[in-house]
Image (cartoon, rainbow, N blue to C red; front, side, top):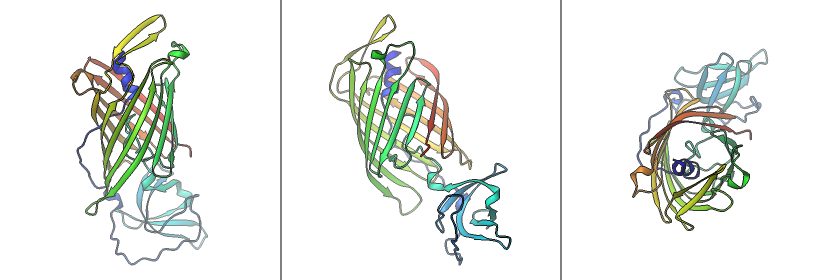
Amino acid sequence: MLRILLIYILLFVGIINVAFSQDYDNEIDDKQDIEFISKDIFKKTKLIPYEVYVVRLNNGDILSGKVLELDRDKNNKLYIKLANILGNPIIYEDDIIEIYPEASKNRHRHRHFIMPSAFEIGNDHFISNYMLGFFYAGFGISDFISITAGRTFIPIIEAQYQATLANIKFTIIDEKWDSMKGGLKVSLGGNLAFLNNKNNLNHIYTNFTFYGEKTDITGLIFAKTGNEDIYDFRLNDNLYNFIYEDGAFGLGLGITTKISTNHNLFFVGELWNTNITKRTNTALLGAIRLTNTSFSADFGFVFMTVPYFFPIINFAWTPF
């Protein structure tokens, strides 16, 4: 059990498949003869003509559509005009709580639950807490480099036996489809993990994410490189050990998909195996993510072939 739990914190996995669906909230005729008027900054967001934005209203409704016009009425009240499935609604600034580009509505595309996708972190720098005991943070450098690091802070474990993880990822390919919305991203990466101050694990990996309007599917291939085959771990006065062979090769699958037309609710799933020669090293994860542009919360369960079944939670803050 300890082996699987530790690998769950330290490893990332995925494999390929694709299923995309369109979000018809944003579908309009791009050939409409309209004039865009830009006179001001709307709710501190620099609006770009014909780009798709998500608008959250005071009454709790959420709309999305292309911005056709930004102007003031005869009473000098600022408004925007959208184009979406409802037509061309006019929405006043006073009725809006938040407006943001649709592209930023999911600021966690760089990961599924803990498994990295091929998406870069970019400007979506974050601070997170996995399972209440593992504190984790990440930042991006341009659209190419993503760096993350974390450490456990579990009160019943002495400092020298806490786990630490550092990961770097390079997004090297971003190919967009011509026939539909979406594309393919590919990245290469590696991580260094310490089970305690003495034992460390190294991994290299590559992953590829097929992304669409509502769904991201990631495949990841990784290998353990260097160091020992047997590791010791101490919990209070109890000493445990587990086997994780050098050169072990793992595969898995990650998926994140928007649930229905709700802009803030996602399903997150992961399936992985840390050593393809051992089917008992397999785990399946499913979770629901509730998110906005500043905060996300994941709640779900993991099933392991040991067998074990337990709940999982994760909270992430994207304040920047």
